[in-house]
Picture 1 (cartoon, rainbow, N blue to C red):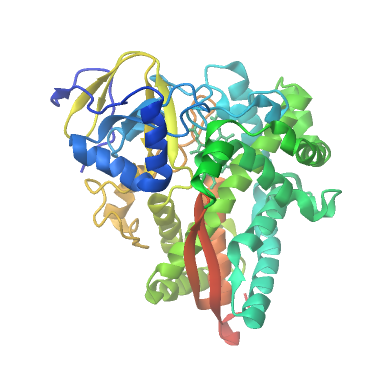
Picture 2 (spheres, rainbow, N blue to C red):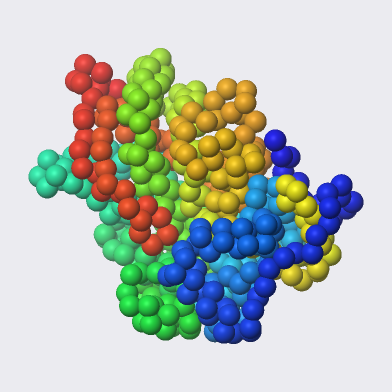
Length: 484
Ligand code: HEM
């Protein structure tokens, strides 16, 4: 089994020139963009290039390209061994690369470059990240009650929709529920109980869309999508009023956190724009993809997995006196493994970038490659987390993959958080500060689900950047075991 390694020092592997071709400036980048979105699709786009050059480290163009991005040329790292170079902030610069080769206008974020776009060498990075750590730590006990309250209501609606119409759109329900859950969990104030009313999710989605549309396809005629989404940025003005309303919620709901921000040396308004971004883009954007992703994999899994999960969850909760506590959730090994496996199969954020800070040597499984200072490195994460040299049957969802001694050894190859699952975010690295929160919320979904239901069926498709899950039947748990 390979040890994740990328090095700037000596290598025992044969040194190869990085194969691949950027083609003719401008024209090839547009042709490649069309391949990526329409003619090949992302998986095939990368796989054909890996196959052509017999290398998992390869030069290629990434979308969106002209005119959105000034330079689409990257060195792609497409295996589990070379991918971790992107986590090493002593070797790669993470300045303004959060969305890749283009950066949305800072007028969408109050004129500030928010934390996700800062390199750890910039002073405000540590201050904002510390603020987020403080909020998550201080609100630790609020997470489970807020999740239960909001998602119990979601499940009740889902049941009545399935009874009335034979189906329920989980994504739609999740969008509204996750938004309220996050506001309540982080700041103790449900957005829907403020002046925002029920408009928070729609306003947020519009603002997110302006930032992420260069990476999306909507199924509209190609020429329209190319012109509207992929070539020029949409004017930030489109979401100005929406952003203002969201900002108002944060500036009043997050009062305590903003006081703390000032003590950490941040300007109050800069901190507020950062809290908005971390909650709406990082957290809400993440939940929109993560939770349908987990439910989708469960729907496609063998029913015997449902039986095993229900057994583990119900017996552990019962042993904790019938309460869903953090302690109980920590003991649920199969539930944790299922969440890791969903994150491995479909990491919600698939692309990562970093610019070489110095001349480097990076290693794939079978060769070493020289990278020049200033070159852009890019990782397509599913190729690292579905690497057949690390994972047996790598393209198959195996719910109990991470159980046992052998399973535990694989946890470090789960890297959805921009770092190994076996490591922790700090103010000096770029690993997601929401790492533990996210894995907890993923598990809470599974826990709440199997406390209510024995099994279920759903249609699973794709939508924008994730899975679309439409629940078609729910088998409620027999009354005798549903008292928890
Ligand atoms: C499913 C949910 C989530 C996913 C998939 C996710 C994923 C990621 C990834 C991949 C990065 C690194 C991006 C890069 O630099 O290349 C990141 C960074 C970040 N995430 Fe998350 N995240 C999630 C939830 C959250 C939550 C709940 C928070 C709330 C605190 C959060 C806050 C951030 C911040 C502030 C950064 C920038 C970190 C830094 O600059 O050091 N994320 N996240």
